[in-house]
Length: 114
Image 1 (tube, rainbow, N blue to C red):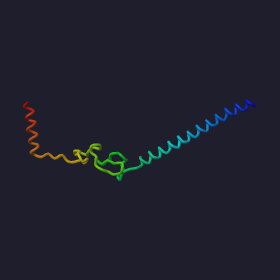
Image 2 (image 1 turned 90 degrees about the horizontal axis):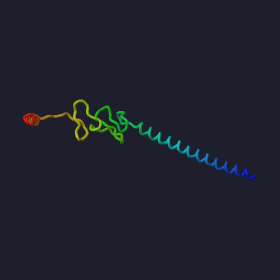
Image 3 (image 1 turned 120 degrees about the vertical axis):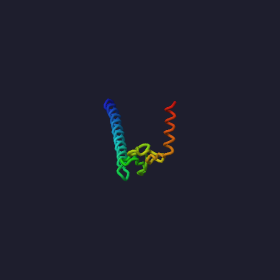
Image 4 (image 1 turned 135 degrees about the vertical axis):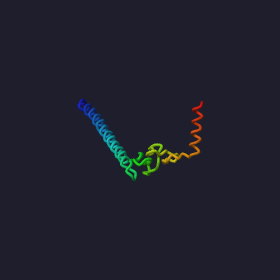
């Protein structure tokens, strides 16, 4: 009789261990599925032109910010054609004034003579 009692005690410990492992596995699986749902919800968010969140738009220099706002960000997204990136994030045409051009040419000539 004592031997039967010992086996059932060991069986109870194993049963409790198995139940605990099953519960832990279920909690882990549930947590993983919730994380995946959150990730896919974030990936589904897009700006008004269809650009994914925190990505550059095909319409350079637009960038889709976390608040789903499209704004210029040429330092990250670049500029189309021959436009130059300005400090405010927009793209502008390069304007060369005649006086500055003449001065630049003179400076280049000075370097050539050195």
